Length: 567
Ligand SMILES: Cc1cc2nc3c(=O)[nH]c(=O)nc-3n(C[C@H](O)[C@H](O)[C@H](O)COP(=O)(O)OP(=O)(O)OC[C@H]3O[C@@H](n4cnc5c(N)ncnc54)[C@H](O)[C@@H]3O)c2cc1C
Ligand SMILES: Cc1cc2nc3c(=O)[nH]c(=O)nc-3n(C[C@H](O)[C@H](O)[C@H](O)COP(=O)(O)O)c2cc1C
Image (cartoon, protein in one colour):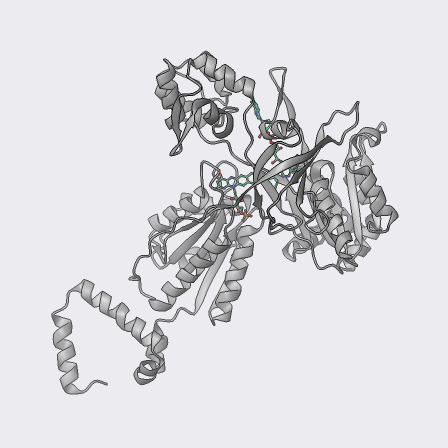
């Protein structure tokens, strides 16, 4: 292969090189060969392709479909470049395959308070509990998250650390992504592909982890804040219209994220109890604020998680039982020693207020320059005292003409199909919100597909949200079918699932003709009750056995024809 004098010089050079130098040269030559088709031709095809990765696995763990969307896009790109791809959701991933993986790309979001999505739980627990060896595996993690949460991209970080601990080698470092993830995700994938094409050994030059690009925040003005429930209702549901000058990029099905402010009376009481100077400057998460401002707009002071209570106990050196508690109660029962210690608590213990999401109930086509949301004021009682949820209370009380900051949360898995497709929307309570957007959008764009709405609430007279609009859409034929369930208008409770069952034959026919089903609203018990009824319909009207009916519904989900947005 080499002329004798070259071979001798080569052997001489190699024997005088260190192990590290040999590894570097190996990578360097592989790079030269794969980048240079002429020399690849000279050295022979087998050698040129020896370093090429021809098969990868891409797995995703998702709640609202964003991780699935990017993973699917990457799978498509990799396939186009000639690489075989095994794409799977982590809930369907065969755990016994893990030690055999050579190249594994993971796209995973973080949910709850730093937890993995439900669909990734089994995988997450498996890698944390089992004594696995993954020394054959090279991997990289794309972590989707939202920097407004204290545990930013925690699930992705955990997976990255744990796989590394089990012996797997990183192809490129973990990339964390904020609410606007598309650009960071694309760059991460490019870096992975580059690393894989440059060098198949474990010696690729490490790439520094990149800081995630921030997210776009908008400021709007409240134009309308209207309680949609009539006098006498048990509910308070606000239709809020926000005017925005900037053009906003969103699609029906997306939500907005809002960081609420704390109530003034609560902030004032905390300042009184601690003796803090409201105007004194304090540092919180690397920014300077006055204490009053930090307590109003930045710091979570309600329903503190147990871990915060534990850390507080350490700072104030008092025994405090494991519990969730509001900051004011904590300060009253286990006081700080003075304003200086309170500032220490702010700087080292307390966490930011986390955002809350609200489905957008307006349509970009029908409501240009505005964004609407539909907010149920969350009321609950603690020790017989009536309390309200932080954000829904804040939003319900917003005066018109005040400003509000928000960002767009993309919900990639809850999107309208093509205009010619039929859709069945099941949205009791605030579940109506994205469907108001869907229907308005299809009306404004003249979509030809049929639209069927199931809506439910407590009483027809007081709780028929968006009654006039829904009736107009029914009158003008935009809504082909509307079925309503008012649970408290008769002795026995009637919910949307009862209406769905009553119309099972027609629903089955729509499904057979290709209709898409959408379900939005309360996760429990509504979404499980509705799903049971859909299974029953597949049994009774589709002649399926119980297990066939279940897999029929699962198939609809897999095909993207049964879509959920439940919370
Ligand atoms: C994708 C998505 C879309 C959504 N769309 C909508 C929508 O269109 N409309 C809508 O109204 N909601 C929607 N939600 C729900 C919304 O995001 C909020 O979860 C809801 O408004 C409650 O938030 P809150 O701040 O008012 O209540 P929080 O303050 O977060 O309280 C929530 C619950 O925590 C408990 N809790 C809170 N404080 C205490 C305390 N001091 N002591 C004991 N328990 C306490 C209570 O059980 C309370 O009900 C959506 C959620 C998601 C994930
Ligand atoms: C209820 C809820 C809790 C969340 N908790 C976190 C969190 O603790 N840390 C974080 O980085 N992101 C958190 N997020 C943001 C999501 O990870 C982010 O929206 C991501 O794009 C969702 O991707 P997915 O659609 O693939 O699940 C949370 C989102 C929601 C709706």
